[in-house]
Image (cartoon, rainbow, N blue to C red; front, top):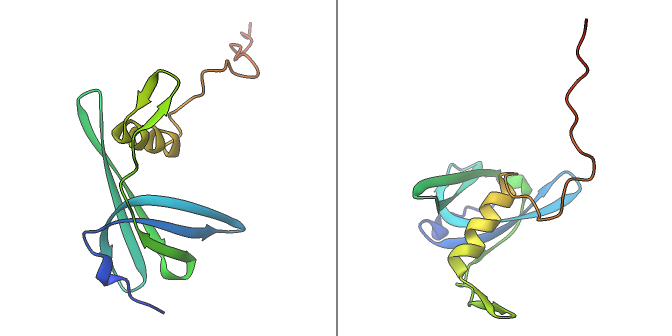
Length: 114
């Protein structure tokens, strides 16, 4: 197995396998235990600083590459900043981001028992 300690402190994008699915994670490479690698991403939301940390076993790492800073993406008249993209990606990864479409089925309260 390869060691990845050369990437310590560098922003990277890692593609890794989870079962039959190939996933991608972007963050700062903060650790190499000899069996797993650790990525960390800091996000500021509503004035609070949060962080996400991934532990990816060596056997699941598919590829790793140094990350280049994304450019500002312009969509119609709105410009999306790279910081906003990172916040959206982190929120989506945490399962907290919802599309603007309404839910498929409305949630109903459970029936009351007598």
